[in-house]
Length: 132
Image 1 (cartoon, one colour):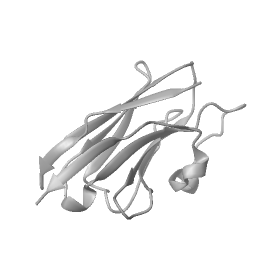
Image 2 (cartoon, rainbow, N blue to C red; image 1 turned 90 degrees about the vertical axis):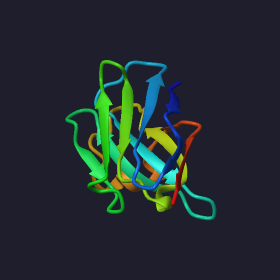
Image 3 (tube, rainbow, N blue to C red; image 1 turned 180 degrees about the vertical axis):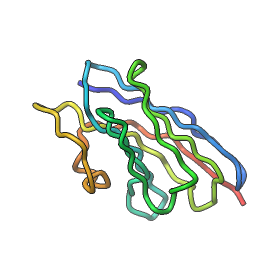
């Protein structure tokens, strides 16, 4: 069973930065996808960014392009989200997700990266609050 643990959330003023981390444990996997989703009160959960560990391909929501950077350290089995130029609209609970375990690797998610159903494992979430 895969466990995902997020860290790095907090409160920051608009224009500030935060870096989220998601550590994966519970097995050895190659060529899988990890993603960040967020959910604000009253809103649906939405995909923020994703990375395919097989070749480092990244995916971003339009709302965060140019401000957020997703990365993955294969040696540490850890995914990161560097968030710069934060806005009050970025305030949400941020969740880490991974498309493991699977009976066989799914390959790069392409446009499916935004779908919650693509992912099999989820973290508990970390709160990000941006004040104006």
